[in-house]
Image (cartoon, rainbow, N blue to C red; front, side, top):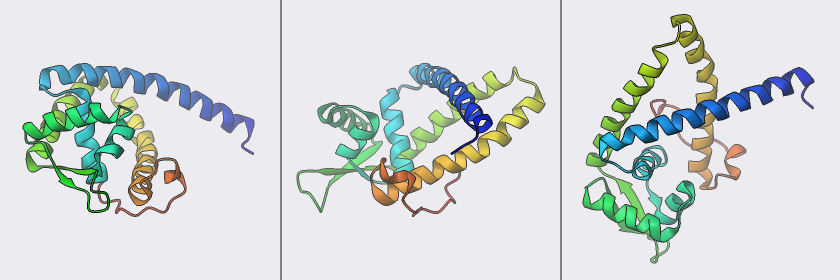
Length: 174
């Protein structure tokens, strides 16, 4: 059992992260309006970059939308040349979605714009605080990347916490 001090630190950190992540989510989501891409489409491109090819069903589950909604979104993304679909060899009723070179380029351009927006937000902080923030986010990023790797290995976000990592940590630029 964790000590009271550690429990308090975990609770405080969780509360702060909930606020910060909510703020950043809204900031970035608003920022996509100028990028001519729907927020969910951007997230799907990022999912495909992180996880590799996925079934439409998996993408719908990750993004918490209904299958028909994901089908419409994927069709729109396909028309823009960002993704393509192929039949799933394991389930002929299912389609596997893959990101295209054009989709990777769109994701990269969007990421650069959104990163500049975040940099502008961080620009109001003292340099020492920004450096401390970067140092403290490193372990969190490592832990989250392990979760992604476990999801790739198991295909199940619930089992991801305990599954062995199957993907190289060389994708640190995720």
